[in-house]
Length: 210
Image (tube, rainbow, N blue to C red; front, side, top):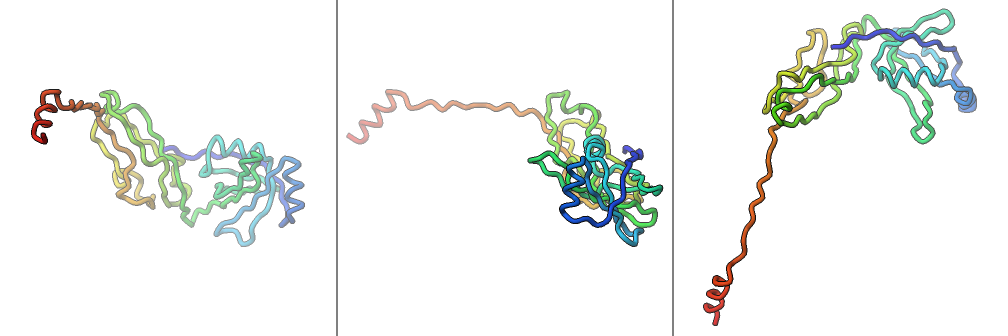
């Protein structure tokens, strides 16, 4: 399991803004955001450079721990949701969840397949059905990713969610019987050619109906 490292994000505070003001922020290269969570009485609103946020999303994904610095205050957060306009390639808005040391959080963490299985080396094929898994726990205990080392898995091996070995303080929310991957053997297709009746057989059949 890969643990989190903290990334610092410089930001500016803003008030609850009208659409015209939000458009102005975006034209200036900023993305509006909101910070919320069980330990925050009132939501905190701000803006950060769009390029900085896009870089964090591309490099770390949504479950990476971020320290937002804003007006001499710091907020340890996760990206809980975001609005991205694919047509314009613009990040319109980000929802930050303030990390709590007392409350658990539900997140989706990526599964990383590491190495080449013994089954593949023997000519088998790996079918991967899951690339993320839903878990719950305190943010200090949640891994940034879950790595499965494939080296010793042979043809015929099938891994389920219940096979994963995670710390007891991490709760798995994905269905326990869901298949993560399976290694199938290489199946060679055999083409059987069915020959038609011979000329002699056709002649005999014709005699029956004469």
